[in-house]
Amino acid sequence: MAANWRQSRWWIALPACTLALLVWSYQPSFTPSPPRQSSASAQAVESAYQRHQSGVGVEVKGRVERLLPDDRSGSRRQRFVLRLPSNHPVLIVHNLDMAERVPVAPGDIITVHGRYEYSARGGTIHQTHRDPRGDGPGGWIRLRGTAYR
Image (cartoon, rainbow, N blue to C red):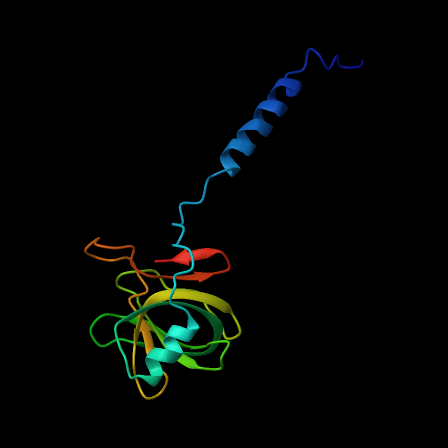
């Protein structure tokens, strides 16, 4: 006895399940889109370093060179060394009490938006998280299309 496919309910359930799966899988990303490239760049870091200048807002792209242990004194901070295209090393300090950990590994290419502070070893970029006062856009780290704020 051959079953009549028109009497079966699968031909109704299959398209409904397919549509439900498509709607469910299409969830727009709620990762905030960081601001576009700022006027400050790796050259601004080089200039600030040469002039021993601090408090400079920067946006730089580079390769993660080395992971360092977290700083646990006061606020927890993730730390790693970023090598800029100019070969300039910069320490990235990312506050884990304000933002989630960035899953970086040596060799990853990332973009960082934050505040540069001079040090003799190349400098530090910090404030790579949302502005807690909400006065401005704050900073972020972008890895493989995801912004960590």
